[in-house]
Length: 177
Image (tube, rainbow, N blue to C red; front, top):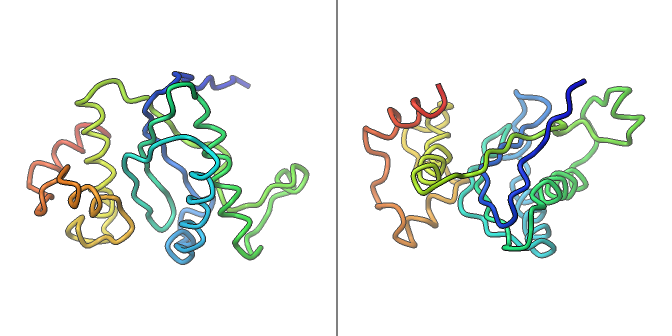
């Protein structure tokens, strides 16, 4: 089996996707308060900045910037998954392999990461994150999705209050087609 080697850029900024094992699940939004508590706990114990995030029923997209002396995003993600899972009642099916490793069956084992290379890459990924609820048919306007940092970024003046112009879907399709 080929071993995946993750990027280990100290102080890097990363686009990360975490996915539930059951892609039809709505566990993340059903237990939004548990996720928020898990995130607060992880943030308290690890030094990083959350640049953007969207929580969908079955997956999460986020952009994190690590501390200057850190390359530990894998530890951050493992902690987030663990903190969330501990708060959820055990009802999911667990494979024999996971039982042997004392794992829950909530999350897919791996996650996807991409190191942000420049300002254009950064902005494209933030737009992708915030438009994702529309892409998945959950809302028709990104502002209608409550589990997104878009609202905070608008309040900070980083996005216009009427963000969701016609060019956004075109730009996103080019990124991930």
